Structures are given as structure tokens and as C-alpha cells.
Image 1 (cartoon, helix red, strand yellow):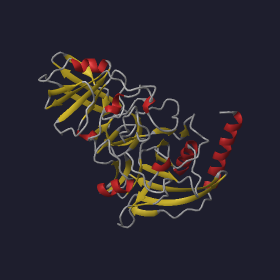
Image 2 (tube, one colour):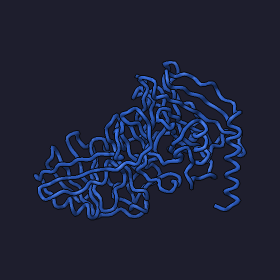
Image 3 (cartoon, one colour):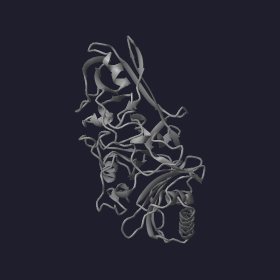
Image 4 (cartoon, helix red, strand yellow):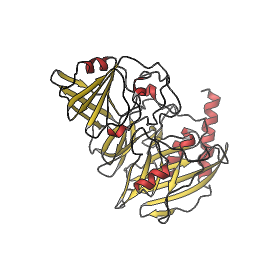
Length: 394
């Protein structure tokens, strides 16, 4: 970016924050003890911006966050439908996902870029950085970054790692993937009932640094039921995976390791998502960091205007801010850098950017009424998405 562009972006941010103080807003509406909602309007140098803010106080008994998700990782559903099905009182859309490209005849899976933990259960891990969708991340960010709530009822940002092994009579090899649409080169991924019925063919396409690279044919899939290999094939499978069954899919060196297995072999497979600290996450969703310790991360896009969704948290992990901004209509949207500064102005010390554009959605239940969409989705209708952040009481 040129010095002039940087100066212009800085000016826009200054203007945005200046008008925020006097911007007209609805009064905080109490959805439940500890949960409020408001809409607001800003007048900025690049035009009007309409926003929607959910504030959640996790000190209030019975208030919690959890993952909004469809019946399977490779499914998509609207935020309002997921919130209704899971009895959330409010929610916003979540992580970026595999939606927009067919890869060498292999259709997109609909699954998210980053990890997912719901109700304390690990649903999926992150694709390699080069396989992600979305705007540029700040230096040091990765697809493994999450926004989540621990068992201590505090929200924190973290970077998750997958610890996975498959132990056989011949030895032990590592598991590098869990229900994800792209596996690392030379890796092995575990797929279970949570993945759904979608073909696993997309998982062996692209590389760690190039999403558009060809699909490899150097693959092997082994199906394990009750700890025993029941079948093997040279390519990725599809269809429902029963609850008592896992499919191990390998590419390159990972395929070589799996070729050593034959039906009847015993295999003990374990996987766990962790950031190496306690307490463990009860809920986590992928998103790249835009605020850390009250400071905006360097390298964020300060120019491109679009609908945005972000999630922030206070320094003590108890106050959460879920922010959605309209765009591409009567509202001009915002840059990623502006989203970060807005979240900071509301009280967030740490924050992540979530999916934007036509995915940006906020849905709320007011006074016990059905959950309804409050923003104006830029597609004209609510877009089915991979996941979201849900607000729950009791």
C-alpha cells in the first residue's frame, strides 16, 4: 500500500470513530438477563453504515455461547434456522467456508475453513493456510485460530493443534486432519459420522500453499469399524459413515502408511483438539485475529468495503460483542480494519473477523418470538452458511 493510501485509510478510521460517539442508535434491548441487542447508524467519510450489536455478559447465570451448526460438518443452513433448531435466543454467522469453486470436477463441500468445537465435542480441524477462503490475514494468523468459550465460562482467542494417532501392530502413525475439506500434503485425515454424506474427494485436492493445484491420485482410504479394518480402497469415499465407524483418508506419504493395513488389522485411533492450556474449550469457531490486547493487528485490509461480521471479548473474557455491519445497499459496509476499531470502541480487547459479504447475518428472538433476521443480507435473502455463534440462556 502506498503512503497516500495508508494516510487515506487512517483518515477514514479516524472519521469513523469520531462519528461513533454521536451516531444515532436504538436503546439496548434486553433479550434476556445478560443479553442485549441494538442497531445503530454511522455517518462515515465513505457513506452511511448500519450496524447491529449483541452484547453478552457471561457472568449472568445461565448465559453461554455455543456453536450453531447443521446436522453435519459438510452441510449448510441459515443462521435463523440453526438458532431455532438449537433453541438459541440470538446468533451471528461464523467462519468462512468452501462454497465458491468446483475443483477439477469435484464440487465444494460447504464445510468451514477452521476448527469447530460444539458442546465440548471436537467436530473438525482446520485446512492448511493455503486452502482457506477470505480476505488476507494479519501476519502470524492461521486457519487454526479460534474464538471460543472454555469450561471456565470465559471466552478467549487461541490457536488449536490436532493431536492424533493411529496405533497398529506394526507401529504408530500420525493423524493430521479431522473432518476437513482439505488435508495437508502427505497427511492422513479422520472422517466420522459428523462429516455427513458428502464425498471426501475434495480433501485430496490442492496443496498446503495452492488451493487451485490439481487433485492428487496418490491416495488410499481405510474404513475402520470397532477398531478393526473392514475395507480399503484406492480413492476417497462418500456416503454416510456410521457412528461406530471411521474412515482414514491419506494422500502421498499418508497413503503409503495406510496401504500397509489390510482388512482384519486392529487399529486404535485417537484425536484431540487443544491449545495446550486449561481449561478445555466447550465451544470454538474459526476466525482470524484482528484485535489483540486492545491493539489492532498490522496488515489488516483498510480499504475494501463490504458487509462484515466480527466477534470480540473483554480482557477478563466475560463480556462478548458480536457485531454485524450491512453493506452493498443503503449501508456502505466497512473494511476489516474498521471492523476491528469498532469492536474496540464497544469494549473488546481481543477480536476475530468472521465471514462477511452475503454470509453476514444477525438473528434475534425478541420477547419469546421466533428468531428473525435483523440485518439486510446483501444477497437479498439469508444465505445458508457452515456455522455460527449462538447465544443461549439456561
